[in-house]
Amino acid sequence: MLAESLATSLPTRFVCLVPRQELLPSHFLELAVLHAGLPLFGFHGDERCLSNCSMSLILAANKESLQVDPINWERFVNRLHEWGSSDLISIPELTDTLFRERVSLLHSPRPLSKHPESVVLNSTPLINFYDAFAPTERSQNVGSIPPRAAELIAQMNRHPRFLSLLGILPNQFRTLLKESNHENREEAILDLSRTLFFAGFRIWNRRQKLASRFWKDIAPENRNVIGLNSNKGKKKNKDNTAHQMTKCKNPFHFLRRYRNLSNKRETRCPCSKAPKETKDMPNHRITRFLCMTTMPIKSPSESTFIQSRTDKIRAQHDRGKKRKGSKLQRLEQSKKKSVDNKSQIT
Image 1 (cartoon, rainbow, N blue to C red):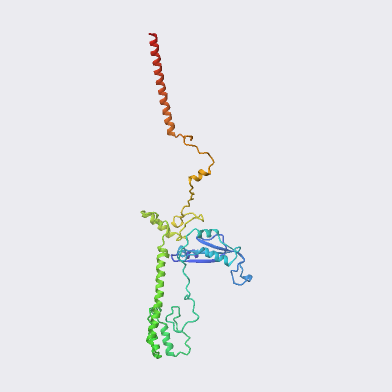
Image 2: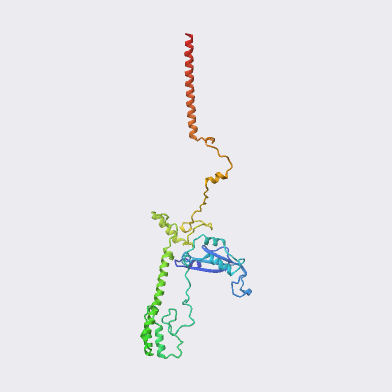
């Protein structure tokens, strides 16, 4: 059921505390293992609060969830060890490497609302047409208020909250001040209208900045994964890469992988590719090696000459020429001897 719930483009995550299991569904992360003896079922030191078996803290999230609401892994681990002793809490090595091999996002996750709609405020003012979290039904805390004033206040509280943020006050408020013979009611109405307008403007301005930042830097639809633009000029490869990105179920899809610590096999999606690690060779001066060596340095005249294959072929040709020259010299010498012998005979 949880895996099917993650098949959506909306940021969705579940954090589960279950008895430890050997096998987990795909892309489910075991954040921590809580061994037996931790007070998981209460705040008191009673034995009934202690767990009697190992429990797993499991995170089931889609890629949009970790993009919009990133997890500060180091802070989470530190807070977990502060809560319990390191002997009773262990962090799985695979999960630790999966977080540490990715570049963490800089923006903070979305905070929870301070006044969620499901929480009824303990003290609701009698006049609350400006409060977006106040109930719209008629207040029962009228006390000794005259019926006419109570009716006007009830109609006043049904005024649209958005109009109140624009500084537009309900007409019943003016009628109430007029019937109660309030002095300087126009000045009071103007002052209240300006206060509500500028308070609403500050809220609107803040929301505009947050929305602009979200759609510019945080929204998953506008995020680019490293490696998508590597096939420039090849539309077919780009389409295939984009298709693989949309099908990718890796929760770390939008977090750049800058090193390979988990030894996970790469997939077709660019999010799984990590740069190849190259070993940097130290650069040393050549004089350092000359100072370190103990062998005597020979002069160029004493150094041995290493012949190449070309030199050896040339030497063979030269050797053949020498043989031909020696034969010619022998023939000339034999001719001279014959001539000298003929001259002596004559």
